[in-house]
Image (cartoon, rainbow, N blue to C red; front, side):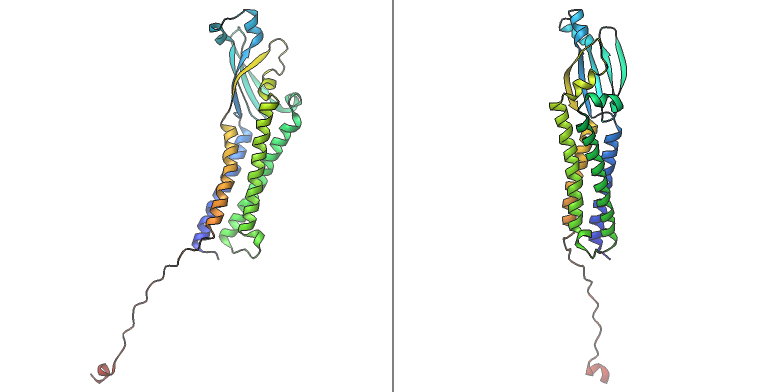
Length: 233
């Protein structure tokens, strides 16, 4: 059986693996990867709006990997509409890159689950193979974190080089054209960043498990010894 220190460190590593999985699942299921402001260019040009009047034509947009929404302001008040990435909008985007991002995140979940299983195993037993011990944990955490980083980088590339927000904003807009005034990565995106960071923290915790703490030794009470004088007495 592993010592108390190893049980503590591997149990903590197990918790971090669970946190990583939960963060990615929440990021996949939420709609706040990106938030931004969009200007209805067509509406503003029709009325030749001046700078103070442009506020009436500035709406909001938010979306995730599967769905989102936007508030259109084209001079007729605010109108909300729902955005669904699949099955039609993804064809207007860089569909291959979008699917790869989702694939990377699911792969990260898979390897984080493997890391969780090995952490629990090491907290309960002493592994007889190196791949089941700390070297294996380094490997699984590295791969899980790497796929998380791949997904983050690919999403940034889709935002910067493929004008993702602009394509989403103008989907199914036959009359009005929208311009992206600002766009920001929101909490769903940063959840993925935090998930990748937890695997880096696991590296540190697994390394800490190798530290050998000094054993506390209790001093045994001295047994009384009988001398010759005591026997004569």
